[in-house]
Image 1 (cartoon, helix red, strand yellow):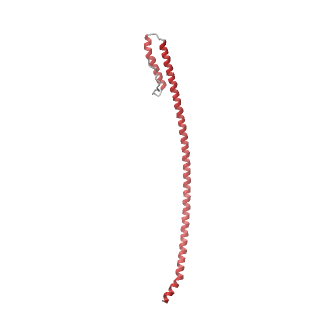
Image 2 (tube, one colour; image 1 turned 90 degrees about the vertical axis):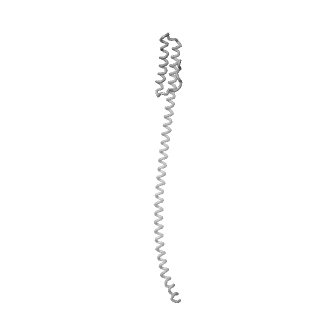
Image 3 (cartoon, helix red, strand yellow; image 1 turned 45 degrees about the vertical axis):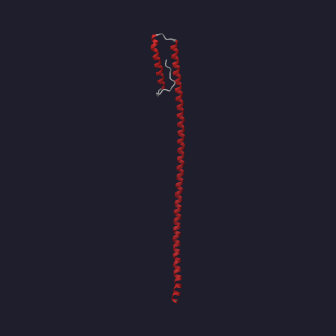
Length: 150
């Protein structure tokens, strides 16, 4: 007489599969029973099959609940990971914004220093031109005198 399998049914509706298995076993044993009166052994076998099917149903239900619990825990971890990742992204964006603002400020300061240096260089060139002109004008008479004496 076939016994109820303790492997997980492969169909999505395991309870239906278990009930079909018990029903097919019951139908298979019903044909010989019609020919002879039911014995206590037949009833005991039927009760054993019902108990085995109920036990398997409880196992499948417990497995389903455990799996559902694992899925909920996994979803919660994923939600936490997404939340942490979002916070890290926001923090990185804030740091990038601060770095960009500092870079822009430093660029402006460097441009201002360059402009100031250019202005100082222009002023220095003007003074050098004036000094050059003063030297030429003041010392040109000195260089002319000795050449007349020669």
